[in-house]
Structure formats: C-alpha cells, structure tokens
Image (cartoon, rainbow, N blue to C red):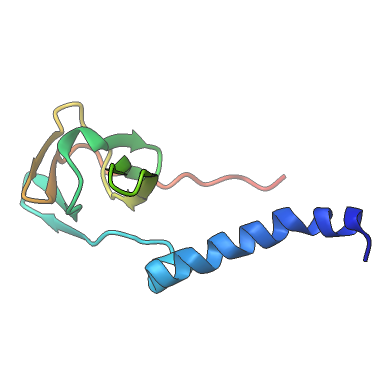
Length: 140
C-alpha cells in the first residue's frame, strides 16, 4: 500500500477504535439503546404514567403531547474536566445520554395534564377526555 491508501483508512480505524473503547466502558448500552421503564394505570377519572428516570434533573426532561400519545425525552449532556498540575495533564470528557419514548394512550391528552418529578420518578396525571377514535380510510 502507498501512503495515500493508508490515509484513507485512518478515519475508519479511528471510528472502530472509539466504538471498541465505548464497548469496554459499558458493553450493554454501547450496542443496545437504553429505554426507561414505564407503568401506565387507570385511576378512574385519570390515567397515570410513571416513568423511571434516575440520574436526570427536572430541567433535563421534556414531555410532549403527540398524535400517538405521550412523548417523554430525557437529555443529559455533561462535560468533565480534570487538571493535574503535577503531571501537567489536562483531560476533558463529554457524556451524552438521551432517552426517548412514546407511550400510546387510549385517550386524548387534556390541557389539564400535570407532571411531577421526584427521586428519579416522573409522574404524569392525564385527565380522561374523549377516547381516541379509530379512523378508517376508504379504498378507492
């Protein structure tokens, strides 16, 4: 191989090295996306969604009413810096963690929906409104 061919493979080799390094840090989540646990139950006049989101703060969690149901997004971005004056060593690491899930609901989401977050548990209280209606499409 000549020098030009060697340089063409460097980006691929770099990407593979990063992939294997991430694997050794956390073998499971390197190849399988994480999903958080959700409980959904009926309380008579409302539906309650409980989602386990430990390690996130309240301002890192977003809740959206989407056509399919309730969308919960937890987004954590951290930068860690370590400086050691003795070794003249400087290190900066970044961690990005994003969890996202859509929970299908049998009811429309009301404007009176309330959400609470405490000790890593997100609770969303959704008052029952009209049931979602099935929509049929005619075939021409």
